[in-house]
Length: 229
Image (cartoon, rainbow, N blue to C red; front, side, top):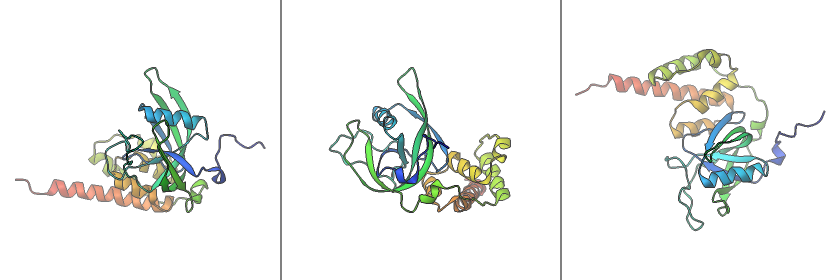
């Protein structure tokens, strides 16, 4: 059987990755993340990635605020980012008529940032990364989760935040896809997203997710019950 030319194995993961710092955005191994790219430096990043291994690293800034690196020149010190991110492969790419590109990333493997190189000619950041400790991300590991508890927490969380969801589609997902999908799309705080990313595996991520959802609901309930003057 001929090997799939569109797959990436652990051994071929590069030691340096262009990084896309974005607050509150989570990419997990096996997840798919749509991105709307319009800033010149990130358009250059996508163009360069398409000409190479089609890999970029998603990472959150340490200080919330959207894009990290805005307004940088080659002599500026880049704003710090979280040490753990996730490498994604571009699996779809569409140009728009107004100078944007729409891409979808498939999450492959998490990484730890060990350093950064100089800004590229295109103006985006290039990080030295280490995948040691995350090799299992590229294997199909079993995820075990208290599904009834997770779904109950989700219903309360979405109701409290006036969010609509296709429950039929959500309930048809297996445990791994359910935990991963909700972790990526739920409107949680950036540090909560980082905690989900850094969870050891899917089973632990499910436990963290349930705890975050239940904590958010408890805080909301306490706020509503507080006396008002």
